[in-house]
Amino acid sequence: MYKNNKIGIFDSGIGGVTVLKEIIKVLPYENYIYYSDSKNNPYGDKEDKELLNICDNIVKYLLEEKCKAIVIACNTASAKAVGFLRKKYINIPFIAIEPAYKMVYDLAYDKTTLVMATKGTIESEKFNLLYNKYNNHKTYLMECVGLADIIEEGNNKKIDEYLKRNIGIYKGKVQNVVLGCTHYPLIQKNIQEILGNVTFFNGAKRLADHLKVVLQEKDLIAKNEGIINFIDSQKLESKKERFFKILEN
Image 1 (tube, rainbow, N blue to C red):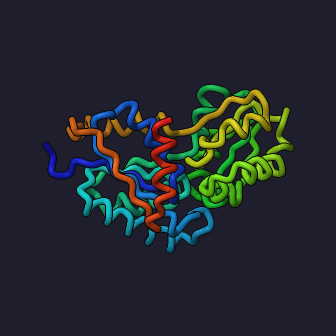
Image 2 (tube, rainbow, N blue to C red; image 1 turned 30 degrees about the vertical axis):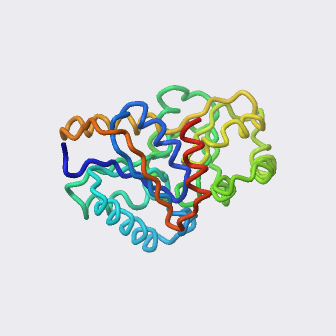
């Protein structure tokens, strides 16, 4: 029906599958192309100029693949690159994930909160504007250096050791946890085992709902086959296998 009939999604690895799962719930008949940039993972420690160039090249590729809209399923890339991309590609809708800190403000303002995110996200201007606007003054910000890499690796022993070492101190101190990286929902159970009965917030569902609204407004909703193509920048078959395993569960 449309010449450009795919929705492009990209992340520094397979973490954005947590976003895609929510999108499929509201847009099951779209065709998707998911770009896992394991070659440049992690994004969190990249200089801004380098990250903009990386994101720009991915967007060029997705546009060549006939994408009608692009989802940035990486909090760091969203925080640092979405403004640049929207200015450069004015005719393409960009939907960007962001830490769900406003959800805490809306739903659990009086509770103590732990924001888990990459260094790049926490230091970004976009996140700081969000944080300062909705700060409940009961919030810990945690730069989870290296955590996304371990999740990408899929080593549960390393994940549990990392969490015990780094977030154990917050047990009994926090009631909310903002998962400020799309990789982190993949280890939500591991985090809960450390912190106990906490409420988790992430921005994937709100992004999915917003994407649907944007496509409706632009008359871009399609009835396709629901095909999902997976591309990894290092052509790693193991990434593809794990991606579809997570997607199907």
